[in-house]
Image (cartoon, rainbow, N blue to C red):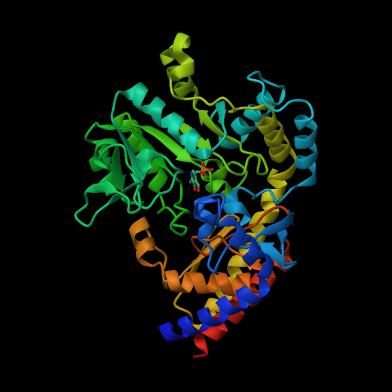
Length: 452
Ligand SMILES: Cc1ncc(COP(=O)(O)O)c(C=O)c1O
């Protein structure tokens, strides 16, 4: 198997940065202006994480493509890190959103869309009772509160190298001695993380049983497959065993489907027949209009309703003034009903397979020490030869220099991947040509990398 020449990466990176500057003069000017009053020079700090001197400024986005302010056109495989998975500005959803906007946006009263969306979420994700938030972060925060309230236990168990939004309990990691510590970069943790959190490796059932047996764990908050440190898939039987352990130790099982909805219309919960007590999800549901939700099993809903202090429910810590607003529900109804349909997922997953095959062929033909992993319509290549089984293994396989080079190389040739890792997502608007274009450019990058 070939090895990658580090000097070659540096050399190509210098060339690609220069090309980026040439292709993006207007973005460069706007980035300069933005530095005066925007913290970090961007509207949200992660927007600094793109390779190149500054982010690309967008002029317009439609379907699976966008055009920047310099007139460059892109195939968008990042899709707002899943927020744009429905494709940008899908006409049917835009119409429904505009119609609702002209009839009222936020009321603190339900519209007819609420019951429709809840019924559809129940059909997809199997748990029957739903409530709405604006972000997946909030959905996770609220169900964590309920889990503590219902069980009287202090801790939430998460996977090492997980990401569940800006949720205090989840920014924990295992140090080399196996102790729970604040994750690197954690800004102002309110308490020491070992008071609030137990951390276990993905696929480590013995480790999970050890922490559940303490009786301190209110809930496991798990993604069915890790998606934020590369895709890490579960071993055969892992989820059945997790379910069994949670039941045995009286721990609530929360499955976060925010990214893993890529596995199908009902996420991994439906695709793999999981049996969570609670499902959380955000990002995709409203075609980009802030929309998120949590769903409860019948038993959880009964326990929550029985434990609700109705006189003080508004200060219980599980709501938001704009949550469940009319605009977000109209957006969800149109998106779930007409855009991210069961049929659309079939096509998106087929395209995901095509993408995976294309990348695999390049890896094989060029003898690259990489591998590609797919979960439904989400695909990722990692710069290590074999698949990771845990978050730690996946983290150890990261190659930030190579990551940045491949990103920039693709970006300079009209393809946008997700900034934190080499992830691609298919939308209902993505075409086979878009996928093949990526394969062609990825092959070009690989060829230049190995040419040294
Ligand atoms: C699995 C998972 N859950 C929750 C979130 C939080 O989503 P948001 O930032 O929209 O609240 C993310 C964000 O990347 C995520 O990947």
